[in-house]
Image (cartoon, rainbow, N blue to C red; front, side, top):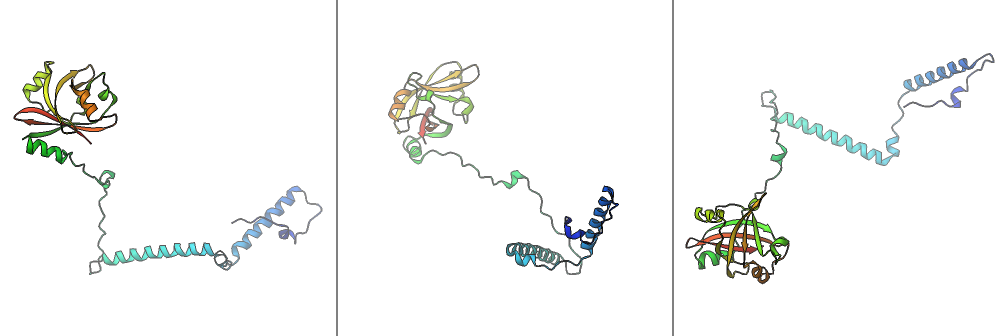
Length: 243
């Protein structure tokens, strides 16, 4: 660390009346060099700073201890890697894992029909071939009395396999189908299934008796629902489940 000159450094200086500004500058440089040389040759000061600064001493001790522990661990690892004949065995490097591998992947369990619905459909009605058609949030357009329809956008449909070839052709020909629907209160009702083809998208819709279903089950905007399909004696049926 560089120290600044003080008046004590010039106490032995004899000033010549004939000195000019340059002579004074040279003398200052000479004194500075002499002081620097003396400080380099001087013995190191006693280690009293750490004793005075208790916190600093603790920090330095912890640092030294941690370094020492790391060295001991490294030495121990080297000794364990020795094969007994004095030949050192190269440490085994762990393969690098990508960030994607490091992230724990929690598989999402497939959705299941609530037990009460399953019991009613499978055991009491003899339903078969349960298929999740869509899981969606109810929007205002789904409960708007003027629209009177439940939309099933193709972009959110889990699968189109709930329709057989004849039913798919019927809808493609712009014909509607009467199907049986089990509402969230597990009451059965007849409802109309249509297919609407728009310019930018296509969707299935449940219409006609949709408004009474909304009122009876108190469906509101933001509700999460699932629409399941199943068959009873080969007839297409649906179940609307409110989550």
